[in-house]
Structure formats: structure tokens, C-alpha cells
Length: 582
Image (cartoon, rainbow, N blue to C red; front, side, top):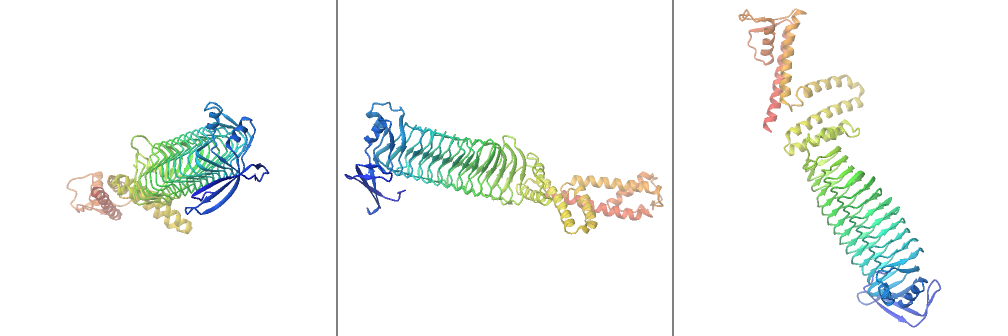
């Protein structure tokens, strides 16, 4: 392909030219390609063929072979005018080949409304040196079409409403100059569609309402520059869609309402420029869509209202640049943002999702999961290893956070503890202190379980003292006061402790030699029940009036009750003050 030139000169010589295929032409076209200093950098010779000769071949329905030729001002519009044919009538082209053909036109090289037969059509290494290129409403039928290594210098190319048939469509390594590349309403059949390593250059690229039905559609390593890339309403009813390592420019990237059907879609390692990217209301029936290690550039990215009910959407290790990320009101089976950098607002208020993976993610701004104007049906969220520098907007009860964490597939207790710790700190930062307490309790419970499991795993004999220690912490720290987060529970535990000791003072004298003695001769004539509960009260609350004192084994029991009472009163004070001060 010859593309690195500034200008060119054409000269038609009155000398025969013999092509590589043996075909001879009466005249030779010489083309000199010049740099900016008008210095020749490349020189080629081609057979010269007049456009009228081509028109006559069309009239006679003969094969048209333009290999290694120079063709000037070819236009089916001119052909129809010269033959008084209706503008939108199809012109039949037979056994067409234009390998290494150089087309040149003052306005446009026009193949609009051409109907190519079922033979293989070849434009490989063709050069459209000047003027727009128009294939509007052409039909290529079956057999395949080869536009590989084609040079579209002008860039204004029109393939709208083209029916490419069921053969392979190959634009590999082609080059489009600056201008509008229009594939709107194009129909690609069952053959593979290849835009591999294609350079679309600057200007808009339009695939609005285009349809793909092949096994494989590939834009791998294709390069788009500044301009709008529009796949709005496109239908990829194919098995595999590849945008791997594709470079998108700084314009708007539009995949709104695109149908991906059951295609395996890959945007892995793609690079997007600084512009808005939208996949709003896109549809995918089942399978995977992957954006692993994608660089999104600056600008907002939207998957709002996406219909991906049976789709696994992976955006792992992605770099989202400067811009908001939104999945608002979308339906996704599984959404993975593992190991991503979320430096700006991320809206994860999905309508329905079985699993959201935020593990190892670094979040520097707001992650919004709190419902607003519609309910969220999220089964589980993984926060493992998350570095939360920003905030998560989430509600313990509305989002059912406890279920979101515990419904994960068998992570370790340590993982559970880490996730609840992250949420505990987040709730503290957002002023949701009740939610903070809930997360803190779950964090401490899982931490306790994890410590027990790790100790027994490292040293099995340690279970002899680890289990008693675990039981004590479970009872005192958890059940009695929920790790000092619930003063009412501590108060309730105090009441039950007081009643427990009171009943012991009442019942034990029937079985052992012990009693409560009045130092004043019992002037109030209290019964056994009253004495038991009164002595328990002044002991539990550490008042110690001295009017009643324990005898025998009750001395040890009263000492224990005094310690328990002092401990629980301190526990209550800590929990109460903690609530009030916040």
C-alpha cells in the first residue's frame, strides 16, 4: 500500500503495458508520488483503461478485470445517465477484480447500486487516490469481498445500505483518510467480517442499524481517531465479536441499544480516548462480555438500563480515567470490577444482579449502592481486599448488607471479617453509626472465628485452651453486650444476672449449709425471698450497707456477684457513653 505521500502526478503514455496476469493494454499510466518538497518518493506503472471501455463491458455483461490498472472518474451514476437508466436501478457487475487498481476521481468513484455476481470480488491493495468512494446500496451477493490493504485517501466512504452477502468481508489492514466512514444499515451475512488492523483515521465512523450474522466479527487492533464512533442500534447476531486492543479516539463512542445476541464479546486491552462512552440499553442474551485491562480515558462511561440478565460482565483491571461510571437501573447476571481504580463517582444501583465483585478495587470517590427511586435486587457483593479512600453509599437494612456478604461462595472467615471491617469504617465516615455498630459486631464475630480456626490449624493442641477462651469471649463480649454496641442488651444482661444470683441465694440453702445473716436481728421481718433479692441487689450494685451479710459458701458467691455487677455496670457505662458521644 502506498500512503505516505503528499501529492502525486499522473501521465498517460502512448505505450503498451503488459500486466502480471499477461493481459495487455494499449496505454501505460505512470504515477509519481511526491513528498512535501515535490521530490519523488515512489514511481509505478500501470495499465491504463478508459472508463467508457468499462461501461461497454457492463453493457455486454462481460467479466471486468481491472487488476494493475489506472481508472479515472469511474462512476455508475454517469453510466446510468449515459444509458438513460433509472438512478436507483441495480447495475450488474460480472466477475469483478480490481487487485492493485488505482482509482482516481475529481469528485467521487461511484459503485452505488452495483450488483456483483456470486464470484469472489477482489479490491485487494486498491488505491482510491482522490475523491470520495461510494458503494451505497450495492449488493455483493455470495462469494466474498476483499478490501484488504485498500487505501481510501479521501476518507469519505459510503457503504450504507450495502448487502455484503454471505461470503467473507475483509477490510484487514485497510486505510481510511480523514472523513465520514458510513456503514449505516449495512448487512453483513454469514461470512466472517474482518476489520483487523484497519486504520479509520479522523472523522465519524457510522455503523448505525448495521447487522452482522457471521461466526466472527473482528475489529482487533483497529484504530479510530477523533470523531464519533456510532454502533447505535447495531445487531451483532454473531458467535464472536472482537475489539481486542482496539484504539478508539477522543470522540463519542456510542453502543446504545446495541444487540449482542449470544456473541462472545471481547474489548480486552482496548484503549478509549477522552470522550463519552455509552452502552446504554445494550442487550446480550447469554454469555460473556469482557473489558479486562481496558483503558477508558477521560469522560463518562454508561451501562445504564443494560439488559444483560444472563451475561457475565467483566471490567477487571480497568483504568477508568476521569469520568463517572454508571450501571444505573441495569440488569446484569454478574458484574466484576475486580482490581479496578474507581477515582470518580460510580453508580452501582443495578436493578438486578446476582453478584458484584469489588475485590481488590481502589475507590477514591463515591460508590453508590443505596436505592433511590427503585428497588435493587442484588444477591451478593464482594468487598474483599478493597482499598476504600472514598465512600460507599449503602444502607445496612435497605441493602440487606448482612445477606450480601454471607451469600458469597464460601470465602474464609477472615475474608468475611475484612469486608465487614471495611464497611464498618465506611459507615463511620458517612455518619451511619447504627449501621457501623452492626458491621462492627459482624467483623468481631468473624475475626473471633478466624482466630480460633487459624490457631487450631497451626497448633492442634491449642484447642485445649482456645475453646474455653473462645467460649468466654463469645458469651461476655458478644452475647452480653454485642461488643459494647448495645447498652440496652447490657442492661438486660444485668437484670438477668441479678435475678440469677438472687435465685441462687434462695435455693442453695436447701442443699448446702450456707445462709444470709442479718446483722441487725432482722427488724423488718423480711421473708427468705425478700432477703435473697435484697442481698443480691446491694451486692450486685456494690452498695454494701452491711445490714445483711453472707455466711458460708455465700461469701464466695457474693464476691463473684460483686465482680460481675461491677463489670456489667462498667460495660453498660462504656456502651451508653459510646452511643451518646457519637
